[in-house]
Structures are given as structure tokens and as C-alpha cells.
Image (cartoon, rainbow, N blue to C red; front, side):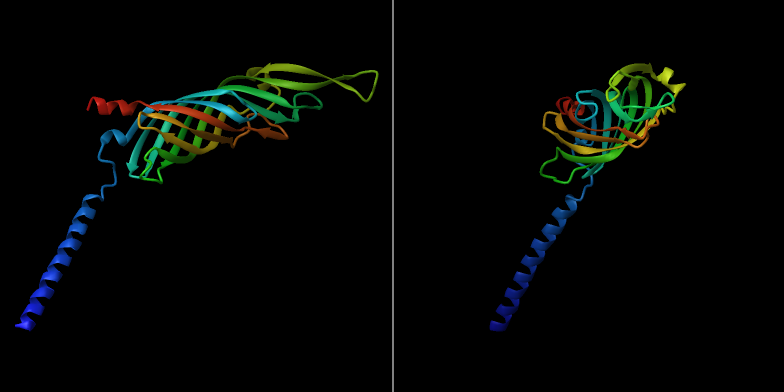
Length: 235
């Protein structure tokens, strides 16, 4: 009888343990979905406003209409159309016989940024890091060139003058590239109501004009809103 009680006790314990393990397996299978259960969380459509903080085009602004789709729980892809107004800096360009000094290039362009969005912390669903590339075409702009003028009576002193050229005027004197390509990256946090705050870094890979040194890099602060958050009130 003692042996029978021992065997029965072992069987009961084994069944209890198997039930617990089986329950865990079932619950884990239920949570293996790669997409959020709420469809409104898979898609984002909204507006993004950016303003330059560090670089050669401080306080210049950009406006983007974007769409994003989350194809995996922690990964998404986003594309947008952006209207860009910014200033870049070129050093030592050649417009005449001699090299001219620093030149400010003010442009207006239509850009298409495409980024991969990474959400590393499930607990903080709005926390996002991203990176990708940005295509663009310059539709308008001007060059503000600092040129050396004739020497004064004091040979150690030089006069300088500012020359303003549209991109069309500059194209006849210097190599100019309207098509643009750059890499982008940054951080964004979206709150429950759809408001987003973050930073956006852009670095151009193609020089707009030929120069000894051309700088087209900037850090932007961005403010965005995801209109898809409103869908949960209607669906």
C-alpha cells in the first residue's frame, strides 16, 4: 500500500506539472502575433514639421506629409513628401578668374524621405529610432557669393562685395546639381494622443555646386502628429 500511495502521488505531481507547462505553452502561442492586435497601431498617416537647430541653415523649416506601415511588431517603414527650405555653405568656388570666398546657397526643394523605423522597447510603444535615405529635387534657389573687390590704398586691406545669383544664372558659370541624395536618421517619441517629438539628422551626399568644401548637414527638431490615432474613436 505504501508503494501504491507513492506511485499515485508521483502521478498526481507529474500531471500537475504537465498542466502548468502546457498552459504556458498555450499562452505563449497566443502571443506570437507579429503585428499589434489594434489595426490603427499598424498604420500612421500624418504631418511632420521640422526646424533647423545646428548646421548652416538654422531656423530653416521643412514640412512633410508621411505614411507609415508597421510590418512587424518592432519594425516599420515610412515614406513621405517634404517641402524643404534651407541654406547650405560652400567655400572657395570658381565663378570668375579667381576663386571666390564663402557662398551661401539658399534652396527650395521637394524631397522624398524613406526610412526604416525601429521600436526597441515594447513597454514604450511610442519610442522610435530610424534611419534611411532622402531623395530630392531643387525647384528654386539663389547663391549669395562673397567676392574679393579691388584693393584699397592700404595693400594689406581687402574689400569684399556680395553677389546675388539665381540658380539659373549660376548654372551658366558653375556646375550645379539639382537632384539630391542624403542619408537621414534620428529619434522620435509619439504620445498616446498622436503628438510626436524628436530629432532629425540629414547629411547630403551630393554637392549642389562645385566647391573646395560644401557643407549640407543639419540637426533638426521635429514636431509631428499621427492622424491615424483618431481612427480608434470611430472604429
